[in-house]
Structure formats: structure tokens, C-alpha cells
Length: 255
Figure (spheres, rainbow, N blue to C red):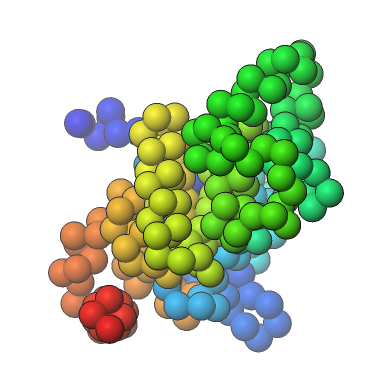
């Protein structure tokens, strides 16, 4: 592929910094996510991984630098302009953020009812298809409180997909779930990328998930990007912190 044929980034961080008081969460961060690509953001807790997602969604503004989403500079966008972006980019929160009082079926139907011109029959057909797609076809009438953490994440993914996004952001999708469920969620996210050609950003500390999903990896440490590239390139990295992270993960897998 020639330079002129390279897909343009769907998301780009250009020299982005963000602080909370004296805590510099992001310092001059640069990376991009190509259309249809999955980028995983790795690093220990508290290094600004989730803040990155909040900035992409426009829930937070950077202190400096520029943020591009869907080829638009959203750094200074108004709330109305950001709402238009959020119709294309959706987020699967760590806690699922489901409505406790609604059934699983009604939770997934919620974004569909926000749109005009869809009949109830069409809504139910779409919801049934999404329930099937994420592996919870027989759970439509249950409440979120009836489900395990992993199943709630699956439902949250289905609800995100109901909005027919171009891009999905996942915040620690496999944290606090058992290894089998983590594997199933990873397989689901990978399958959705292939089937729906979604652009995805996955914040995680789960190396197995990153290896399974990532076209490229951003490794954050103390607010800075220490590495940005493929998993294979990361394994050859001479950066001491990255090497230590990989070695610690190997020890956890061997334990």
C-alpha cells in the first residue's frame, strides 16, 4: 500500500496533555487509530488509560494538544457537536452502566428508541439479533442484577452496538471476570471487529487480550507513551519498563 493509499486515522492524539492539580496524567501523548483498526492501550493502573477514552468521547478536554475523531478536530467542539460524534463513537464502560430497572432486552432497545423511524417490530428483531450475537439470547427478560459481571459486559457491548457505531471504546473489558469469561469477551470483541469492520480502542492491563486483539499497542507509563507499535515489536522492545511489564506478565501466566 502506497503512502497515498494509507487509511487516514479515525482517531489521533497530537501532543495531548492532561493534569489534575499536580498530577500529570497525560504528558505530550501522540498516537493514532486507523479506520477499522484495533489499538490496545496498556499500562499499570493510574497511568491515564481511562482518561484517554474520556477525552476521545469529549467527556474531558485536554489541557493542551489536539484530538481528532472521525477526521474532525474535536478539541474545542461544543456539546452539540460532541453529541454528533457520540452517535458514531460509543463506549463500553467497566461497570456496564446498564439501567438496573430495565430488562436486558429493554436495555439494548434503549438506543434504538432514541432514533426516529424504527418500528417496535424492527427494534425487537435487532435486539434479538444482538442478544444472539453476544451469546445471551436466553437472558432478554432478566434484570442486570441477575447477571454475572462478564454477562453484564456482554450486554453492555450489545447495547453499544445497537447504536450502530463506527467505533467502540472498551474500558478494561476483562477486569474482574473469570479467565473463561475473559476469553469469551476477547473472542466476541475480535469477532465484532471482523464482522462489522469496527474501529476499536481497548484499554486493558490484560496482555493475553492485547495479543489477541491489537493491531497496534500504546504503552503508557507515568503519563508518557513509552511504546507504540505492534505486539511483535513490543516483545523486542529494549525499553526497560516495557520489558519489565512483559516479564511480570510471563510470571503471572506461569504462576
